[in-house]
Picture (cartoon, rainbow, N blue to C red):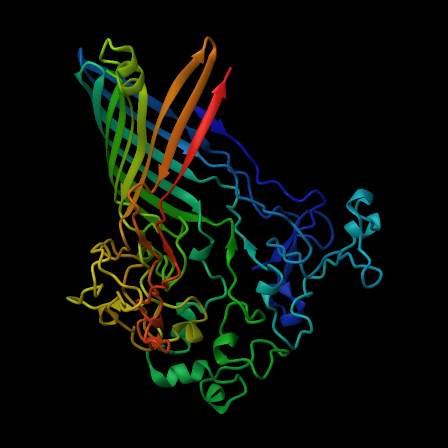
Length: 536
């Protein structure tokens, strides 16, 4: 049993701020969204932005049962927790902690003169470290413009950001000795991740569905889309009873901007340290292990697995990623971007025996070591292309994805056929995708298991021998070969826009377009090295 209790911490002098979702903003007519300052005392929120999670209790249980002399059943289960979220590095210029607009700067005295020397340390007034403005209306400034949070790292800290990610993992395995020194093991391995950091699952400044409903706006309707992109001082906005959210709201602002939860900010507002992500992993894992005997040592592992994620795991946004509609969170579950469903790895080492009594033959043929590691796995996933319907213009959240067309092949050539010529072929089929209708969300998943690039193979081999020069003196020579069979790997094709026009150079060679492969982005050169080592 393990119990972890770790606070998220805070900046030494509480010099941290964020956009407060309940803080009145004097520069926006008292609407929520003023700058909130962490800590205690006048001008501060009298709070911490995150809370320590006290229930990170992780029991672990393991079991081994010997069925007979050569067979063992093993099982295990446990809960484990991650470390806290990363603070990165807090600087004045582009801080992720939202302090870039309210910071102390260092400038050089004249052109060509350094602002400071590391040997002298940072030179500033100590009082300046504690006298930054605590004005909740410091953004937007001037009030007649809109704040741009992306310019100064403005975010909203999730109050549960101190909650560590939890992994619930288990396995059950059957291990058997086939013959002496040779065993095989088959196992089911699974885990479920919860509370993983997934900041992209929330856009605090996207127009809420309830707001559209209140104003009877249907984004799928062309007239309503025109309304959303109209100026707030337009006659169309007046006809629908939509006015400025606060007096200083610029006349050039759109109706969509005015309908945002925090209309004083021109960007979406993501959460920081939001423990909203989930992950799923299930695998059949088979291992064959031969301990050294008769000069041979061998380890082989095979995995047949499925990896899925919701809002985490490196999945990017539409046009190749996980987050499509932040208001339909369950639908964002997809294959993890690094998914490799089939993977086999073999590592071996063999030393030739000295089989004859003839001294010269024994010396020449015996004692050579042959080894290697070979790896074969599924190709990398290709992201579903992003829709071209400009949905984000009307909803002010992320865009959406194109829809997959049933019955249409995804490729014009099999990525593994060995017959692709980058100077001629466009390998992706644009007919496999159709754009999402105007004002509507696409229904495709972020990734499809059959939409993968070339299978990956890695074959590294070596051969060597150790010679005894005299007592306690040895010379070892080894030749190492990487990509030993000279396999060629093409760079991934351009997959972002099926409607893109193909371009060609004067020789008729493709230079861009959907399914285009850059002929300069090809890997696969075989190489080797010779290593000599003298030991005494």
